[in-house]
Length: 418
Ligand code: ZN
Ligand code: ZN
Image (tube, rainbow, N blue to C red; front, side, top):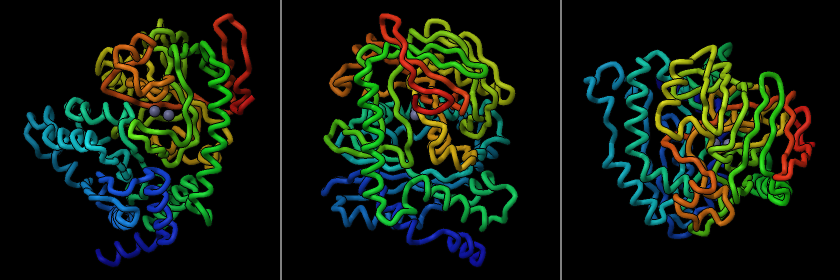
């Protein structure tokens, strides 16, 4: 067992792993001197957690508090817990997390578990557990969605995740390949990743400035299986790359990130749209999604795989049938070019244009951080317990920006910026 573990961590380049930790602290979080940090990670990511703690304290962190999760512990619940367990969540913990966010604690999430971990478990139990968790997490999630504090998500190449992405390889080879893919997408394969991120943020900013200058009323997506008009919320603002949280810290919430995104109008989306990549949703693969919208609401939903789970998700609450995000990513993005399906939204959403069902981001409104939830709703912002991104972009998608007077401007042609 020890030899085995040594092999796995030996297949991850320690220099690049250290750079990833540095990028998470200095770019992803811009952790401030004296600021506390709350982080969650799979146990496999412990080598990265330790490096992050080191960089965080060097940056002046007050207190770093990690919580680790384990795939076997998660599975033990599904296999052995009493039925009533699946309507429960550690509310006491999430209340504490919300309290910490209110006290300006930064948040880091390291993803790396097997995305298909729960695929063999009872879908009803999975749905109940997710719902209980979403409800308990809501007070903390509102502070993340409202961008009260600087937060960041990065990835670590867990062994079972690596085997899913590279099924034909031995475990240590798969981990090495996934590590390289994560490092490249996170720009830590370059000698000066912090400078590379500054340049990348500037490039994304030039896109958002153009889109914000246009002030489109709607975007019209056309492509195979897709003819969709996505109305944009009143006073929407495009975001991409680094942005500034309510606590004044400018951070990169997602690493990697290639998208520019904004808030659709929850009541002005019409037409039909097909997914272009499978969606891995909490252990279930949902493939070939085809939905139809009327006045912002999904009135028809099909999938070739995982349709029951999709329909359960859509029934979560009133907002789960409406859009909370629309995002543009060129087909030539580095993650798209890798040709890999990561089974993980953090990566796959940066390979293609996408839309998200559910909760909107208040930061995607002009002066969004000072708007009340009622004002956001009045301007077309959606509210839900869920936020699920799925890919609708490809090399065949065209997008027109539509002005209020009907004037059209090409935005994307054949999957690339026009
Ligand atoms: Zn997105
Ligand atoms: Zn999203």
